[in-house]
Image (cartoon, rainbow, N blue to C red; front, side):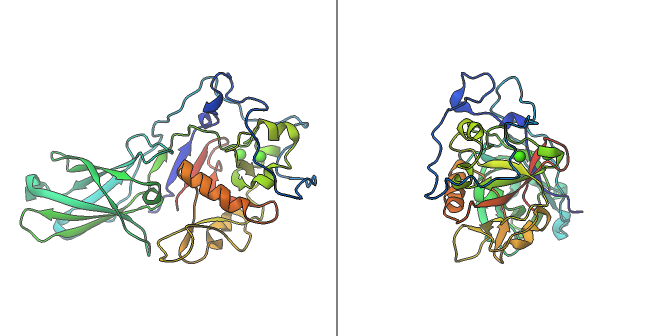
Length: 322
Ligand SMILES: [Ca+2]
Ligand SMILES: [Ca+2]
C-alpha cells in the first residue's frame, strides 16, 4: 500500500527571478560566484557535468516565467482506525511555497456521521516512526466536512505521518493516524540548478546532486558564470557513488544536517544515513543555506545526493520524502 510520497517540481522551476528582464530566466555572468576554497584552482574534471563545449542536451525551458505551481497529484492512503470507525485522510490541496512557512496540509476526518459532528474537535501532530512529533496549528475548520487546514513548517513537511487526537462531545478522546502518500508541487522562486542543468547528459542523468562551492568553482567557465550563487543542483547518473544528505529525524542530539560518512549509489542512499537521520532535501531557502554551508565545509569537492529524481519521466523531477 505504500506509494512513494513525492513532490513534483516543474521545469518551470528553472527560473531565476532575480534577473526577470531576461526572457529565458538566465543571465550570463550574472551573480557573484561563491568564493572557491583555497587550492581549488586545479581543473579536476567533473565527469558528470557536461562541458558546454560539447553540445549541451539542455532540457527545453518554458517560454514564460511562472513562480507558483499547482498541485499535480494528491492522493492519500490511510491506516484504518477502529475507534468509532473513524478514519483520517490528509493531503496537500493548496499550493505550497518552498520559501517561507507557507506549507499547508488539509486533513479530513471521516466515519463520524452518527456521532454529532457539531462537537468534534481535534489536535494534530506531524510525526514519523521514532521521530519527534510536531504540533500543527489549524488555520481553519469546516464542521460540515470535518476538515482542518493545518499550517506546517519545512521540518514537519518532511515527516509523512499525521496523528489527530479527536474529542467528540463528552466521550473519551481517541487517536487517529494516517500516513501521507501525496504528491505535491512546491513553488520555486529561485534557481537551484547549475546553469545548463539539468541536462540529462548522455541520456543517463536522472538523480540529483547538491554540490559544494568548491565543486562549482571547477565547472567549465561559461557554465560557472551562468550559475547564480544559489545554484547547486545537477543531474548525474544514479549509479554514481557519492555521499548522502541526511536530516535529523527527531534524534535528541546531533546536528540538524549531516553528510553521510559513506558513499552510495542513489538507490542505496537512504541506507547511508545513520540512525536518527533520514535522506532529505532542504525545503526552504533557509535550509538551502544551511545545507550549502555544510557541504561547503566538507572536504574534497564535496557533493551529496538529494532525494530528487526524474526516473518516472524525463525532465519531471520530483522530491521523495520516503
Ligand atoms: Ca534525466
Ligand atoms: Ca547534469
